[in-house]
View 1 (cartoon, rainbow, N blue to C red):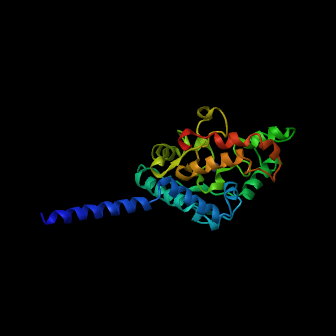
View 2: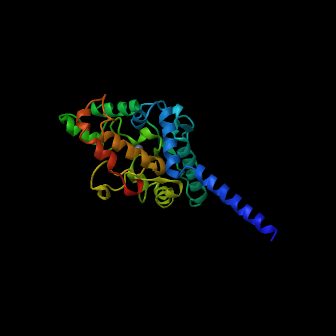
View 3: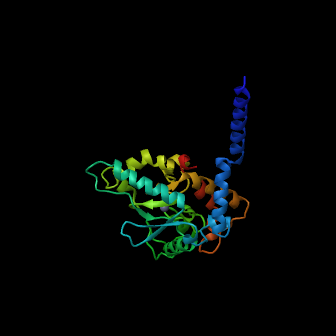
Length: 264
Ligand SMILES: [Zn+2]
């Protein structure tokens, strides 16, 4: 009889500790949004962050590219998962494979995206067709085949990256990156990555063309995409500051929304 109250006391203590512990732990969702809030703070606000108007080094982790010369920037969690994924590929690839996975492009600021956009808009940077004789709308559509307009790029978010080669054929059968692409298709999700621009026919034939080189860290980019859409719809996020922006205003939403269902 003597030890029964003691047992009860232990059970009481156990329940108390469990209750307190559960109370103090934020839910995964709360944790996520508070992480994003602190990221936005570092980038001087949500809209600046979503549109790439901030200093990468104040928010992101710096990574070197394969040659060790160019700096890449990704959010710390994304950089960590990327590094783990690249290492896993090295362990799991076939013995005769000489290819590795490497970064070609990662974070791009509004201004970097603007210089790509304007070089294409003016015809300085070559595209599939010349800009000569085209209307502004035709030029914008041509650029949008493979480049985003400033303020609408997923590369502003520190969650998205381009790897190895900017051509689909590299990743297809007979291409050097076929094994990499097959491995990523099966395994990238283990590390949180997905391919937002898959076959266009799977995305209502809207948005960008397929990009087998562009991968995104879904646990964060999924929330950022939803925020971008809602801020744009409420007009808190407005596009400005480059050639063709008035045409872009009627197209931006489709280009940001229409991605593969696995990345949403
Ligand atoms: Zn890309």
